[in-house]
Image (cartoon, rainbow, N blue to C red; front, side):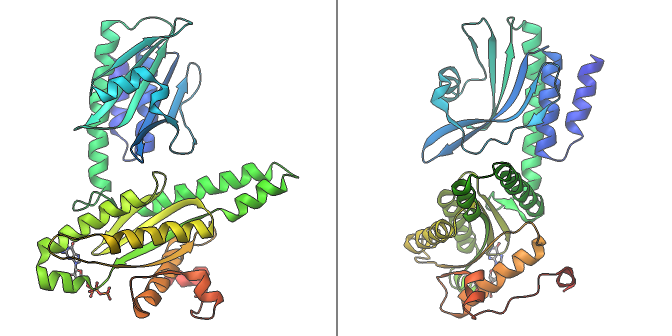
Amino acid sequence: MDSLLKHMVDMTGHRDHTMLDISVISAVQELANAQQTRVLSVTVVKGQMFVRSRAIISAGKTARMEEQQDPGDPLTSIPALAACISHHESSAEQVDAEGNHTLWLPIWMGDKCNTCLEIINPTPYTPETIHIVGGIVSVYRNFQNLLDYSERDSLTGLLNRKTFDDQLAKMLAASSAEQDALTLLPGDEERRQHSDQEKQWLAVVDVDHFKHVNDKFGHLYGDEVLILIANLLQSSFRAQDRVFRFGGEEFVVLLRSTTQENARRIIDRFRMNVEAHEFPQVGKVTVSIGYVSISAYEAPVIILGHADQALYYAKSHGRNMICHYDELVSGGLLQAIASNDEAEFF
Ligand SMILES: Nc1nc2c(ncn2[C@@H]2O[C@H](COP(=O)(O)OP(=O)(O)OP(=O)(O)O)[C@@H](O)[C@H]2O)c(=O)[nH]1
């Protein structure tokens, strides 16, 4: 019981999803005396469900996060879990050819499941183990809910400004790791060149003439427009990208690993999706977007400043358009702001 309490204190002491994942699998691994425990992410991409490992602990090893790229494997590759999720059940169990028992425990948030615990054991699970693990799952779900609440904007459900720096740092760390992995392959020129072209991107999205929407139709319709734009953002970008509401009618998107041409295509597709959308009562709404590639050597405030400069160029040159900061600078249409440390003081 002491051990259970110790794990509960550890789990509830974190204010970060990553640390929560690590402490939940450490707790389950020890209390179920398991061979392996994982946290799985369940995502939906273009109507199809995917599953990927997010954190793992194996017997005798320490828990660690997994750097697997989204979206992972189709959920149908694990039929027992696919059936469990489609029937909205609380658990699924399967014994494989080697006699290993796998237990899946989806974490249900209402009718949605984004996370699932997976426990592998050479022996069957006793009712006591299932009872204890079930308790841990409940605490984990409640805590995830609480973290989500503090990280998300209450109107749109998008990530809020507070989480931006952390998410940007994670994306930059992942991109440096990818670069390092490639540097270890001398002579593989083609692959290296391909990766050099793939960058991370930041886009600032601002609704055009939004004051007019509020003034003409009222704040309730204004809010409805913001919610619908948030939905369009989530459906237009990929699961591995991150979408934030920075406040008011300004949104920020972090695009992961793509070429300049793809970034332009993806961002413009979103702009066109908004332009084509019929907003109830309000009718047509457009957005202007400024975007820039992200470098690990520049502070977030500088990166945001560059995207903002490109956005204001779009605003002052007709709106309903996307502008790439580097293109504007190289075309002599914008002046680059010195990206040294001093700039952070302004
Ligand atoms: N309904 C609603 N309105 C908001 C919210 N936050 C900010 N606003 C309004 O958004 C409007 C922003 O207006 P401006 O910054 O003048 O920009 P704009 O009218 O969109 O014009 P441009 O950006 O130049 O195209 C203001 O009227 C704010 O009151 C919100 O959460 N809900």
